Length: 93
Image 1 (cartoon, rainbow, N blue to C red):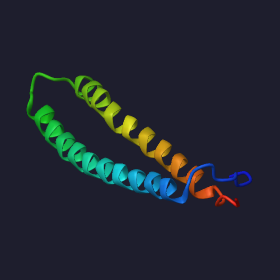
Image 2: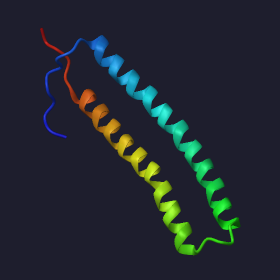
Image 3: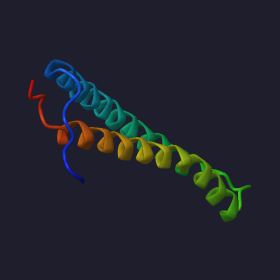
């Protein structure tokens, strides 16, 4: 990352941002586990349905996996925010 920037917020607010980012990450982890379990159930149901072709199954799973891709994007943005907040140097006044 580039040069650190001067912190424009009080240390308490910085800690609050980091704490909220951590809480959000915990929520993402719970959602990710739920999505994995839900996807496993979906795969089982799709496999049990004799009327679906392999292409139908793949298309449905691809639509479902959009949720996972969105979650990955949120996780990436969260890391960028955390990196930005952590890279700031404390105020010097």
